[in-house]
Image (cartoon, rainbow, N blue to C red; front, side, top):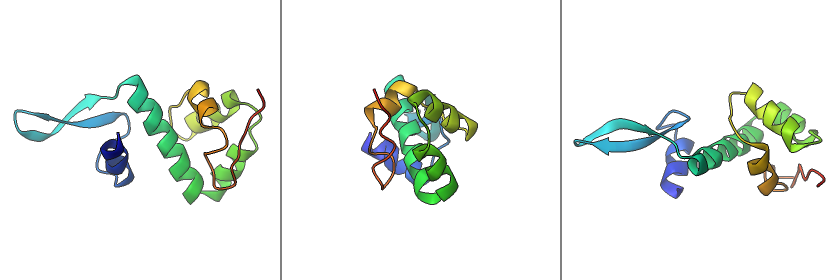
Length: 101
């Protein structure tokens, strides 16, 4: 997964696909598994929160994981409320959001 995150951070691959090798061709792509898609979505949220203060503020101000997932979706990021819940308190530098249970 680390290499997948590294590739995403360097914009080497498109969101929602992972690099694959078929018949010696490095340009082949395969769909992400659910776990990889979750990691990808969370990584994209963290990256956007670091680079876009307006998005970071909106994310911090969400009151539920559902609202945060909808915010992410509005920015082209597919992530489940459950994945966001597991990462609460780690998505921005300020340790927010921490949504109530």
